[in-house]
Image: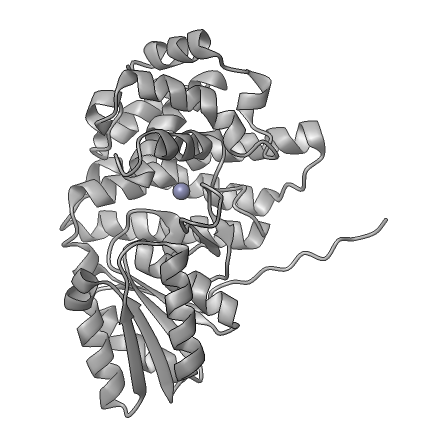
Length: 351
Ligand SMILES: [Zn+2]
């Protein structure tokens, strides 16, 4: 038997709690980065957290460069790469919700230097996963970049983010229920590598978020701890698996398809949550329970709540299979045409 090399790249330090922003410079020094740091942030995240971090790094005598980015595009990734090559920092810090962290993640990976994730919201698992979702790469889904060497999540900052962003985070975690089913199915049908440990970690995260859905809201520190730890665990599950398999299945493909039909209409985790209800129905799981837990977390469970036309939901369901044809999911087992897709959306009361 030949054993295929399986490489896992995991975070070294994970700090979740109140006031952890104060610990960014200590963590940099502890891991050997005491000279030059490059910060990727957005205009808003600079005000929320970035300036504080930059000042504390400068106070310890470190040289700090920074760049503000807007959207997670290949153009921005290249612009940051050029700056990194010029400034030659030891480490990149990504400070923000999703876009800034994704740009920091991919640009640092392409330059071969480590990065820290400093999330200001808890809206999806990209804050901890090795994958980056970047527009312009010719793929509507995430690509492998690198795991953060440290994740520093300050709940004082995240507690102030909106209910909508937090609900989106819940949707992205609950999505692991069908993502893991799809992974298991691909293993059974195609003999694809399946890691029970990574799968269990993702499923446990989904279970914990569902059990605590009522208390995951702004200003609820305990609830947000559950969500942050779940998002981080999902990111780590993908790092252990060496792919996005434990975190992304047909429900994510539905979300990516919806992105191509109605771009920037709703948040990633909101769309994935809605997709999970419908894929759970295809798996003959208790989709009502999933729907009710999403509702408890204030996440949208209908097309109307998502702000999308019913017809677009149907189109996305039909299109989802083709988004990632190499990824075997329930959508290959139960091929949806317009008629059957509409029935799925209607039965689950999404439309
Ligand atoms: Zn996701």
